[in-house]
Image 1 (cartoon, rainbow, N blue to C red):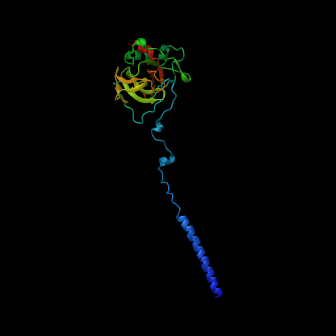
Image 2 (image 1 turned 90 degrees about the vertical axis):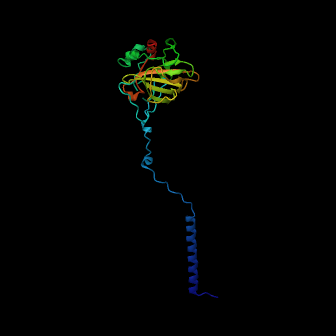
Image 3 (image 1 turned 180 degrees about the vertical axis):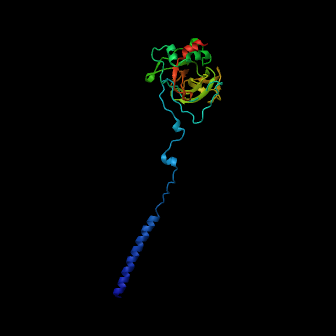
Length: 268
């Protein structure tokens, strides 16, 4: 049956609307069927600014002139204090800003440049050789010996079997226990009435049981054990013992080195 003009228009319109409806449905289906990626939650101000932690901002950096030296990270907690009448008190690795140990310099010159009455003060303290069973005749003066990277030793090495007790050379607080790349297992002790003399013990096998920062060690007390940690070399067991005078006990990792050899030889 022939369709009239009006019927044809209506039929075409219906086809067009059906096509449009199909297109809209198809687009909607594809849009709503896509997986939804959740938005990242908002970050805190610290994350947005990539702010370092408080501990990270308190890490001093320096280059050690000591064979066993390395700069430890100071503890973010307040350091223990010692009353003026108590034995001196810690935190890092010995650096020498102005090492008195230039080639050929005598122990007397090194001690004099280390400041004022440091030599006589150390003599009056009658330091103990800090390795059990070692006598004065077994000590060797390695203070001026050359080390890698053009450095000077600025310390003495006291040779002893692994596990030999390391003794506190004098009374004084342990200010830092530190794991150093060069020095291995190390510790720092303040040991003068004005807290300006630092004793540095390195290459330890381990610390004495229960040893902690802030502990006031007594002369002859076992504070660790001889080892070969750090850059000592496998089997080269010895104690790296270093003395230096600091201008500020709060910056005990840098100071003027003093040769321990003549002091230990003379005070036994």
